[in-house]
Length: 109
Picture 1 (cartoon, rainbow, N blue to C red):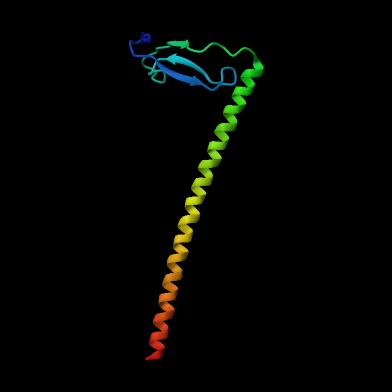
Picture 2: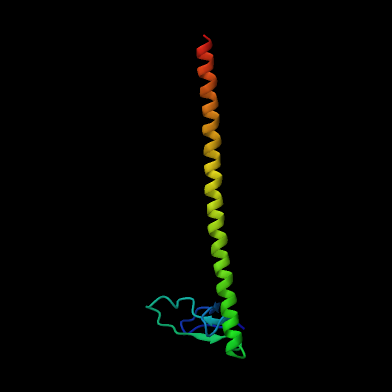
């Protein structure tokens, strides 16, 4: 059965990543950011984690994963910059070689 929020929209399932409810899914109004709807529909899908140790551990795992993903994105961006720089160097090396050959041919004349 589909859950409808107070404004008649189909409630969307999202995941909370707060320290108190890490990884806990909930249903909420898709227009929750729109101040004109004033729909405060909210319902937990998952049960609460059994104790604070689990909550802290789950939250820390989420933070570690997020940090690792950010590091990976930064490393990928850095790799792209290095690849572009290598391509430029290769291009300039070819141009330099062409210039040296042209100067040599002019010198031979």
